[in-house]
Length: 281
Image (cartoon, rainbow, N blue to C red):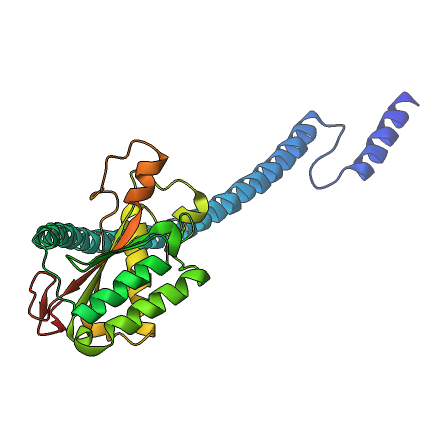
């Protein structure tokens, strides 16, 4: 009986054995485990292969994107270098213009000291009367130079001409369009005090005092031409704080230095670059 039982058990066990070997056999058990391990290793190797392929593809895409971005940045850098070169040329030109304007202004000041007034007696009298009517407007009958304090024409830090200043400039333009005055040229010069531009509302429109003084002179010219003065007769310049009338020591002196001056010039005056009434600039 024991022999039969052993044989029966072996038969039954054989029925449960698969292609990977019998669980009752030590060699079959190890063979099954090795097969499963091989399958797991193959699956893992395949997963690693696919991951490697995906990484290589991603690397290729990233390398291509970086290359295109590098080329774009190189192009932008080249454009910026070109713009910088152009701006440097413009800056050099502006520096030359400022030096030229400074020389012209000094010549105008020297000319005014000689007492030369190109205006007729009638126009001189009209401008003298105009100065009496408008406080803040000054006219020198000896030189023909007119001065407007900044608070007469503009609000603080602004280049927009005040509405109540419009009649003054309209009358000035009318006088300059009558008789022999219409043959004369006009140079408008803006000045500021030494206080730098700091208010955000002002700085957004005028970077510094150079810009503020120039923009104010431009606006006066526009107002004069709007009232009939030919643009060929007009010129504008801004000197910032570089030409003070008096030292900037307090609020009163700074107020005097904030001004707009109008020089009336004979048609043959080369001081402002005109030739027979036509601007050469």
